Length: 471
Image (cartoon, rainbow, N blue to C red; front, side, top):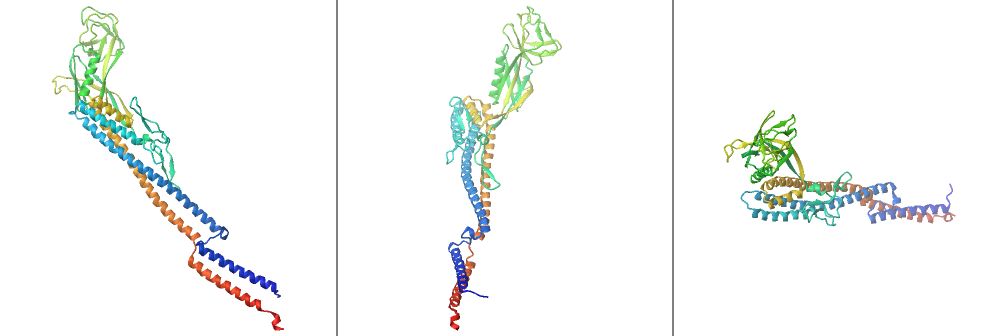
């Protein structure tokens, strides 16, 4: 086989250049500390590195979101804890105001303090974050969440119920903003209506609300309004939150068809659908003085009236039936029939009490506080007592919200720990793919230097060989 001098020189030069290239590459790796200096060095490794770096960038984004939420939840926890403390103070004042020994002036002073505390809670409900956004306005973060009317004093919610979430991991998101109505929730207010039956003229009558006996007096010729007012005053003096009503309606199927001069000698015709029953109260058009009459006996067409019907009633005069009812709310919202003997009367008329309606209303957070202020200003002890139970409900629900915020903070901390563990593992994998093994690289570099020097030395020796030396 013939080997030309040019081939020998070219091949030797190529070997030297390859060795120099390997030495330069290893030197560059040692200098940068990276096993992959250029994308062309290893495309498969480059793909793995880019994928891992992408995961690191996502973790950075998740951690930034978590840090933002930590600040946000920390602010919410602080202000809601303050609101909870204020509610506790308002409840203490309400319990104090419900005491019988307090005067009207004392309750006015308490009303002033509660009004100030209510305004403070409104201010808390309109808290802004560091970016100037209202934190309890739902999706409407640029306007006040709760606004108090200068005319009525009523507080209205101007936000909405939209809530946005931000991711703190590939599979987990937490709420960024909150709907104010879920933070400052309503309180339930039960209202029950009872019909009172068994009124039988003058004297004392009674019924029970809870364990309290509610007693009132009726005088001769008392009007419907006078009777209703007597029931209402008895409720208020007993500290019961309730309203007395007089239900006035034409009694169906009743016709006054004869009128005599003598009192009590009045003929009345009833059909099968007449509306009179024991305990009904009614007035008759045209009767002198328009007194309230009571039905004490209904048996077929035989009706006993107390007091007796007066003279002067015209033919076909209309009978207007009147029934009385009470609507109760708050803790004492159950009424029952009366007792025959009370502390003030051995012969009190016990009324029959029948439940005729019941409903549970949702009263707004700030409406509860407003109703308490009104009850204090109007010295309504029953409504003050009702506010105590409603404040307990508000306090309980607000405490639950504070706990939920605290739970979210704990969730954030756990997720940050998880993200930190994931980041550590990704960095390990990234280091395996990208970072240089210095011990291996230095050993390889020394070997490549030796190879380069040997290649250069052998070329120098071979280049000196010539056939002319043997001629």
